[in-house]
Image (cartoon, rainbow, N blue to C red; front, side, top):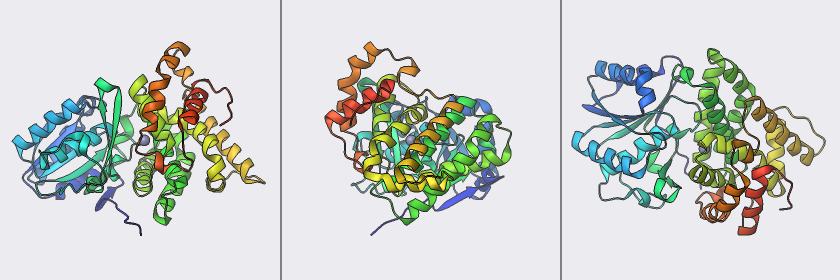
Length: 387
Ligand SMILES: [Zn+2]
């Protein structure tokens, strides 16, 4: 039995932000970041809310928000008493909004205790609207949230089905201001979500459909959007694909790229999407043994011709490396500027943390300590290893 969960409403396409004019309630708390505010998106959202008769307050979070900030946000929400929480911005703003919302509804809970197996009993005080201004995390359609614990150089992978937003607003005008580097990083994060969802043992017909469409769309349009943010069609397609990839993995699972990527992000402070981009091709080489047909399906879906499944998978890996090169992504950890000395010093820590990742069961091939060590070493400088 599959319990498929999506946001109740997805407002997408040109003018989608105007959906805010139709919501009902007294107060909304907008959780966002400094840059989003500076660009003017917060005012835009607040003005639409005003038309709906909803007053708004803003709580600002830093990029990759810490537990401390989130706890303050929960307190802020309890004092303000909103009937809507609005996550506005990139993935980390939206992730922060989700957890602030939990602490608002459930002040008895600690951030780290959010997991898929507890009943949160949300929506007694407020509901959640998510408005992405970047095209990648898919958080506006998922049950997942990642919060940073800076003291332990660790990212907490938290999830609960009650965290799937009530409303996701996918307005293609918002990602227009994304810097080019961010277009690459977040677009490749979305590609990773879709590929990992498609090869996961937890896949199903619903996640497959969304994943494969997202993969095709990203291969077709990401170069164009990267090259020209004014390209309206490409921008809208990528913005939609990112949400579809989120819908796919939240109803399947992500795997080893996220398991390793969260660790690399926490230890070396590499942005999430860039960590994903680096690891993605390596993950396919590692997983191919257990999922060759599914990866070959993906290859064929993006127009790769091959006589055998293994040839198709090799060409898929090549196609991803080509795309990433064109988008200016580093091809290994070494290329991000991490020295061998620094890498070796952190390797034990990386391996131990990766083995504890809650998303590993979503990967088609199991991982043990020895394999994790080899895989990290391979990702460091792409010197071939035997897994
Ligand atoms: Zn991701």
